[in-house]
Image (cartoon, rainbow, N blue to C red; front, side, top):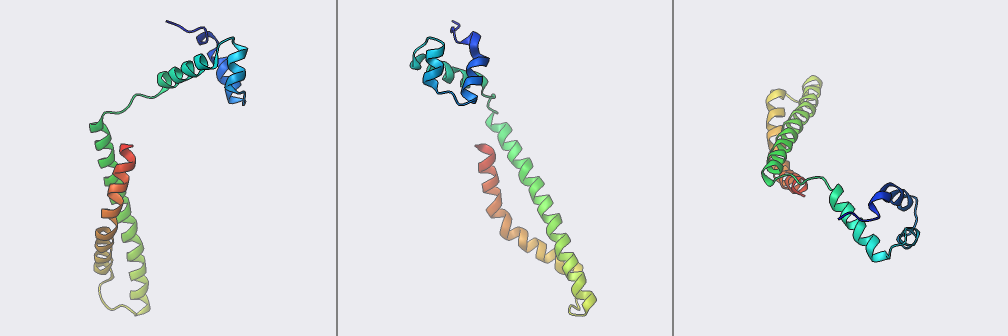
Amino acid sequence: MASKLDKHKEEIMELLNRGATKTYVASHFSVNRATLYWWLQNQKKDNRPAEKPVEELKKEADRIVLDLRNSFRNEAYRLFAREMEDLENSGLWLGNGHHAAQRMTAKLMELVLPVLEPIIRREVMR
């Protein structure tokens, strides 16, 4: 059953967006406040995006974590490799800078990702 407020939906939303009180809007359209509140709640339900299935959210979380892991690893390695190259060029490092950068990247991944992954998954599943 359609409400008499339905035909005034755009005008009601415009008034509320401009700061009109719900009491004013209800009296303007000759309805009581409870009717307006009920109608607004139904509008929210009708305009809510469909929820994604849990499996789809899990896949999205897995993809985001994998992208983050790859991006983080690549950026960390790039930074470490640059620093190690600078050390090699200055004569302060006599070992293989590439291998050292790989080891430091692996250690950083080992320390950081176990903390970040659950946070990312929790945020995606909200």
